[in-house]
Image (tube, rainbow, N blue to C red; front, side, top):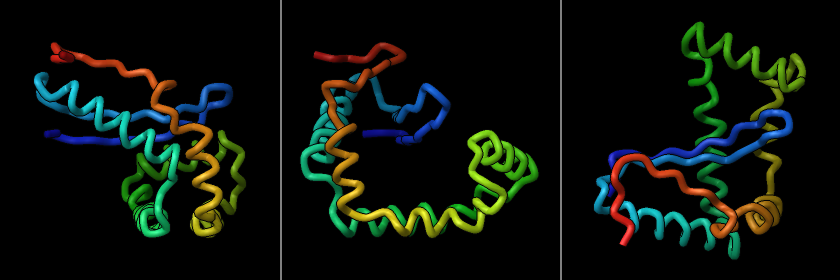
Length: 130
């Protein structure tokens, strides 16, 4: 169905946002949007499973080193940590912060923010939506 899918969270002062993107054929746009809404709604109602949370933590902590595999990434990340006032020891504390997140924490936040009726979809191209 898709050539690729991605999500990300941007923490800018006064404008935090969660974004997602996908690359799909025009004739699958309606189907993809319905699946996205369905999964956002499920997460909002039920939250993730413990296994989903464990998998996410393993990915987020394991992939952290890849944020420092080029000089440009090192500079961009260190600047971001400084701009976000995370402290000079953030690199040493970060994985512990992720590991401390509980299933109840995630379910509470998912219930608060995962509301498909409040999401905005922007489509580029000539999507077929009937």
